[in-house]
Image (cartoon, rainbow, N blue to C red):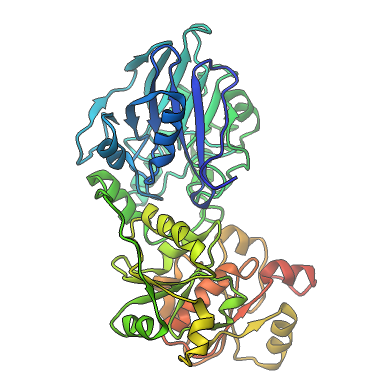
Length: 476
């Protein structure tokens, strides 16, 4: 199924309910509607709003309300885009400070839509303004049936409270979350289904489970973070354990600011032009950044200075990590069919559409006799041999903190891929550097960043630490 069209139906709710899943961002948004009135509400809206419009058109419904659980750090909201397309009332939690027109809703306030009632819960912790939405289907009874939890409760986790403020404020956010979970979330009946915004693949949690929904009862019994809520200090320590929290991508602070102000409207998107090798080279010389969307193996031969982020489930996170905020981007693709997908990945994280793409791809570049740069690809066997021969060889491990803590190459230097853009000077440019991650994808991103910044002797390790462990090479 194409990304973004995953569906789940709530077993307790008679009204219409659909989940839209973006694997690439670990993001889920929701459309829930009344059979009685034909109205619906959409929550935590992605920037490409057409799927919601397609769905309500198919069902002969309308979107009456749009709401965000919080000002997101990991993607650009589509709430302003949606309001430009259809006459929808925008809602915002009372504690949210937004720059667009929205009706504030307070803790405990209810909104009725036919047989469906939405109750607003102020659920701070992940962010101070955070709200969740408790849903009751009155045609079934008086008890709530599902919770749209945003980041207040995740599958097997809670959303990280460390994204905003100094260390003292962050600790207070975690304490606030602990109290909120006890008073607002775990006071709900066990049968209530929980549909979070942050799902597997999101960096807003360190232990998010693979399922796309859960229940209060399951989390009460199985979520390790909820077992010691009566011990607040222990909960805070677990929430803020940096060994298990993913590194924060550098583009995230821009997302929150953009979402609070109200993202610019997209309007009619320009079609990026196909460029000949000569035109493409000229654009790069004029300051354009080349983003090569091929996989690591193909990137072994590439345009000098290109950044490599292979098109796939992790593309937006790593594109946002290595691309400067105001970058004018030119694409190298496996084929023209990839263009639309890359455009939307970039738009969802706040970049404009690319300014062009290389017609004919790398085949056209090579046959036009344009310059090439090589990125050597080593197996773990090659790496092991070279470590024994060359005491000056640097091994740069760019995995997440939990991966590093679980075992690494004894001589390795650790800088997570998310931190590398602002810690790149810690890598010695005079020595060869072999970059390693879990499999070879993130290491290729990081290796390309080093080459982009002028590092001459860079190697990517294919197979990564998965292959290193499989080969039973030494770990520390």
